[in-house]
Image (cartoon, rainbow, N blue to C red; front, side):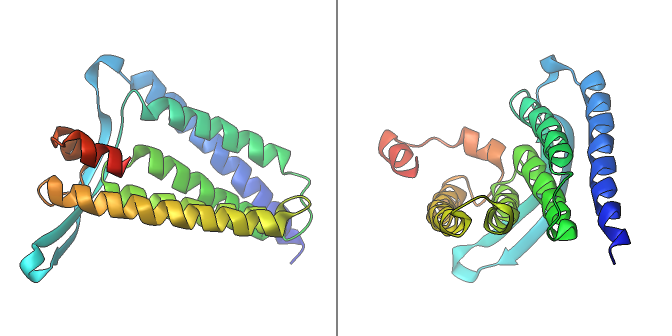
Length: 193
């Protein structure tokens, strides 16, 4: 119903203000000298792949000195995007739901410390972006959304291939911290990049 349209606007705005509140709490207790903080780590996926070994992935999130400024930027940019989208009139519910999904996926991709989890957050981020471009973009939005889809599809497949390669090099782990400890020769590094 038409009365629910403004509900989605206000729900998105309240969600953004809650994010700002929680972000201020995090900033108040964040200690730059401690490294990785606010860690959430749980076993997530364990699959026996026979002779290929075992696929293991974790629900592993955390903030460090690199991801925290990106999360801060995301929270404030999404608040600005919500306020600046207040006058959207076409399919308002869909727009603000996609904006909330995009918001969660961006923050998830910045805080993920497991590459499989990062990859899923990254893909979830691309879907709402595709629809936001295709449905609410400016002139030429169909062309832009198809181009966006093709470029991100190619990039995602190459990224997935690199993650799978690193998974086996890092002792069958998608954990980003283990990837940092994996010694690679220059040629595989350049190939992956």
